[in-house]
Image 1 (cartoon, rainbow, N blue to C red):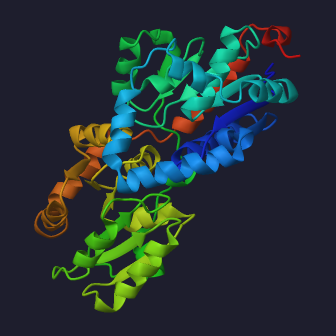
Image 2 (tube, one colour; image 1 turned 180 degrees about the horizontal axis):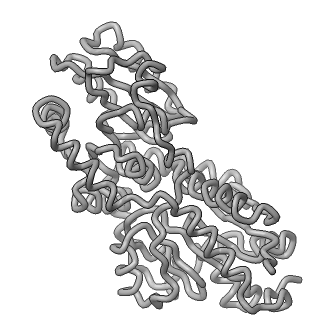
Length: 387
């Protein structure tokens, strides 16, 4: 008999991916085990709202205006040992608040979709202040020390590449499960593309380019890319999603009268799966969730200036898998657009076929099933060390 009563998911909102992964697992578990209560916590915001605002501001500014600096920090922290002073400080962030949350909610399992709270729970386990089963869902195709913590029961990873990286860092093979990165079930739908094109006022015969700037519209150089794209003389249709960047949306809308091709500009879109389903190619960064959603819908990708760090690793994975091409300079975007949308559409068809072998449609469900197994291992509730 299942005794999976409560699941605590620890996440963060630096970008949209970590939180969306948390919600995908929550919704999958609601289908598999409706009696389980799930609590999703935005960890940094919950323990220190001011710090959360500062960190988010610095993150967004660095990836937009100083990506090399962000990449330097990412690389510099990628292999720091658990015993280092920096790691010990990170693992102590909100330690008492975390223990209080565990004692109040009394979860059967704790899942982290963001690395910082995973380290904090690991620190509590090492101190003997809890023994709750813990799992981590890594939301990129990259290996980084911030995701690796002692006494973690299970790691859910997006690809065999990440699995091998964890094994090389000393994680036991039985503690690593290749599930894919969790996405919402809406991306598994079969769509009527003709009906969607009619819904969005798109011609059935002209290729559609979808441009995704991330949840906060921080894809580098996006305004100037669109400014040049609006004057491109080849016949395409363009859909631009600027996320929560209202200033960028307004700036692009001011350019619309000059556009030589049909262009639609959206802010944050809840049902983004429809726009992905209707598109022939997506120009984007390389965020872990966005690329997983695109793979689910077999949408070929043109990656532009991925952020140094995890996005560069994601881009390498996609290009190596044959489902994306990379543009490092603005002019390369238009070379790829001409090649894939105008001159050689058969290349897109091959990319779509390769996506079938890469995508993981049921990652959230596989994670939910394994969490149920963790909760039902032969443990007594007293062993969880709640006060």
